[in-house]
Image (cartoon, rainbow, N blue to C red; front, top):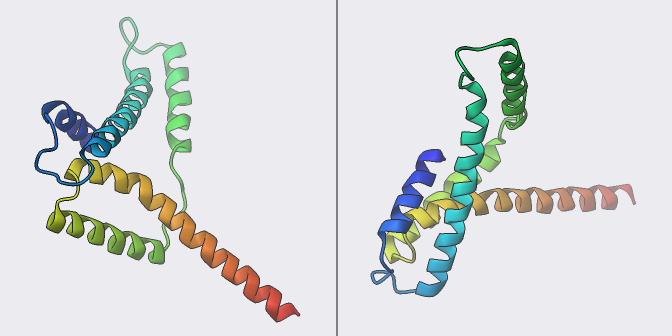
Length: 146
């Protein structure tokens, strides 16, 4: 994601306008700069977390080793230990393939903007799928109990 963020920053600052893209040029500009802000937040958060691993004055002392252990725990807490469901992985594959192919064919928006949009939208779609399936299972179990 850091590589995508750097690529996104580079493309936002090097593109002059969206002459090649026909649909909603102003909206794409706003969306692109909004996603640029998200990219920068992500990069700065990770850079801040990595500074704990740099030596202070000369080498690693007791206090810094304590900070490093605390930062290690913080890094570990950021990641989920749960495996992704196969149905969610299949949904992600179908969704991203369809979106990227459609954008390739119709040139709706720049690819780097679409990559960030998919990073944002895909978890919402998976959550919506889980919500809908959860409601169906709850409804089905309520009907079976009556």
